[in-house]
Image (cartoon, rainbow, N blue to C red; front, side, top):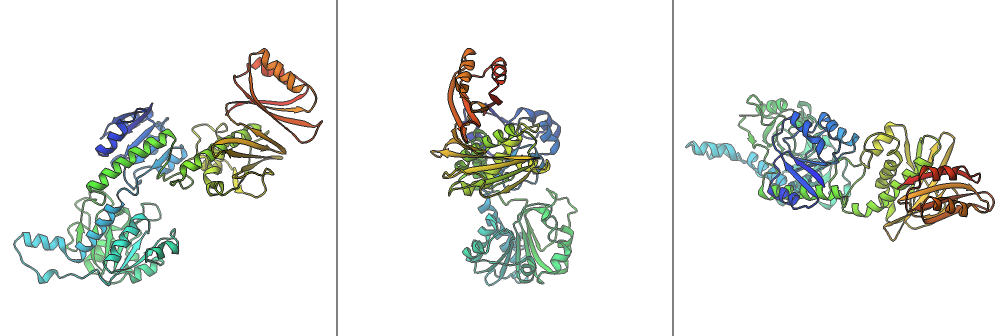
Length: 528
């Protein structure tokens, strides 16, 4: 039974989905203090938050069984993602659920700022008819500069184009083809500042985006530019923007987010007549709240059950709609990593990976993460999984690279790896039969067909008569049945490598008896 803590108000739709699950127990406890959360979190497999709960390193240290943190919304700046990654905790958000709402709020702020909507409303409500004083300008024919051309940025672009605006965008992670498909021109940031009549921000809060709009940045912009921020308050140096609004360098601003929320009374932007303020309403629509709530509930349950992982922000690979296709390959790679670790005679320092086949080649990064997880799980303390394995491998000096010709086996969708220790190496390869059944097909120069699951007795022996009978007889004396025996050898009279699937775990006396036989060189018992 999974235990899930909901520490912020996420809405009824998500709670209903969670409570309907017969394999989950849900606790809704909003308003917990940091100390109360630390004292409580150790009992839960998953935590769902919005923006009120701060997930700190201290809290994560206490979260011994936590597997997933779900953010009902897009921004994860209230979560220590680095600490979560180090501990193998998946952090996921719901980036698409409130995208339309935020894009529409951006357009609303742009229109309100350029047509003096808020101040004109206030003066009329106070009994003054000042029609001539508040003449605005049209969006049509103006240039909109979008900083950050992700999901929300593209939705804003679509709407701005419908207003007959010219749209330019800056995003170093977006290709020219994506921009061209939406009739948007990608430019560098300096050119965007120089050309745009309106600038809207759609980048996440991060170290490299903190205070990206400074006095220096504003000085590079057009005189009379309008700035819109419905993303994150940390993107703007508020005192610099206030000064530019007062001087007229910036004609107007539409601000939905603030560095500190709610903003303090001495916030320099509050009270300026050419600023349209809203209290972080970007995602505050009935539709967005419903969708965010439902999506995070469904995502958490699917991830806990291991059926799908959607919208993770800290997996070392992209987890999209095809993640379910990747999971069997990752399970195979995990087993290869476990086998490589246990069969290596010394600490592994380097890993080479090769993935062949139309399906598998698209999954190289998740396969690599899974292989490292299997490799490290019995080597390091703590919960080692696909989230933190690549980071931990790097921290422990294990280098990982792609290579060609790792294995000699010739199969469709082949997963191969070679590990290196101080004075040796071993290649290993596996495939999926029928797209789901893992098989080990090569170990070093031995070719075979092994089911790498359950109890597995691995034996290296001299290739002499009587070994198979002796092993079967010895195990039989202790009531251990052999389910399957796969053997490989390079040529007669040398050494043979066997993988023996067992129905029950042999006692230590049985293993000792086998190890005492002169024909047996090495013996290893694993549970996969």
